[in-house]
Image (cartoon, rainbow, N blue to C red; front, top):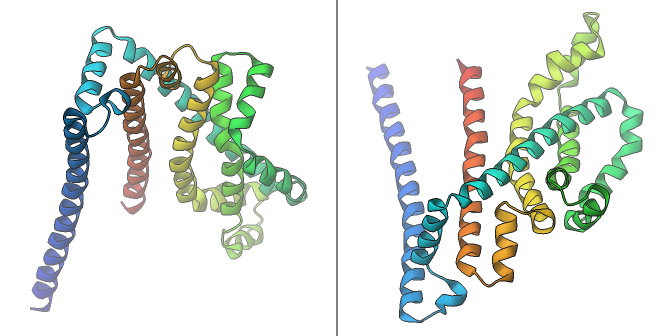
Length: 269
């Protein structure tokens, strides 16, 4: 009898959770729809200047025209490529540096203030310097994307490595394990959730850095489209590019979120 009561209560709890998620999703969509409807009505009635603020219908027409001439695929593809390359390089280099700092406490003490300073430095200030050093190339844009995320990522991962239960590491040493064994058997597995969380942040930061780089050193990409359209007052293009950036950011975040769910599902199975 108690088992059946628990089962009923569990089903009620799950139904309540599902209902809550449905309500949240519906209201999220409704808020977005109301925003676009009010924007369209305000533009059509002259409440706002449609030349400056554009309208959803104009943005859709602009997007469709660029789909027809296929130019939008070039801009989106370039930005996605540069963002993913910079993101992967950030993850690899940040992990490598965090491991080196963990292996050498003396090195970490020496480098910590420099990493803090570099992380707090406004990265937009580095972009013009990168152009002088590397030229107006795609490499400059990728490095610009990396510069926004890499120093904070190193500090975050290194901090995560130090939150590992020291008793487990002592156990590895007691069993005649090496520091490398402690890293691979305890530190890295313990830090995987932190690494995934770090990836969620970094994908957005890399996108920001890439757009900054495209503002200054690109001939295509969404960043170039934004800066060019603002210069020639094609504000439909500008707002369309911003909307596409929002969609792209959500898509990239969803990919990392899916990776996290796959990891958690594999871990619990």
